[in-house]
Length: 141
Image (tube, rainbow, N blue to C red; front, top):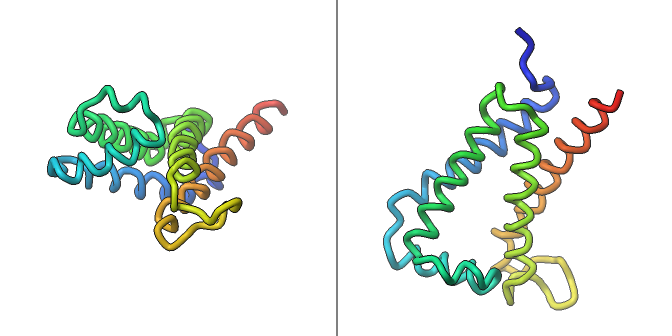
């Protein structure tokens, strides 16, 4: 049985999958004050999220991160599918970085001290796009 994952995709899938799965698991059971802070930052960047209660938002975010992390870690999930999910998720995170005041220097993408933790989401976006482009290129042959 041939798995739908190329050997070259294993290391970045393991790294991103473990990172995202851990992040989702850490959000399970988050206290209400932390949930309110996280939700406040998210809804400032994406106002439509204001319709959700903070605890509902965090539960959904946690479940989504755990699902995406598992999809990246499980070799039965095709890399194209995992890459599309990673690209979509990380695009939202990069948007959060770009839309949140004080995360990057004015008129620059360079992170401020406060923005360094969010700036790492660019490598997630690059990895997801790399999976999609590589799979599209290989599938076109």
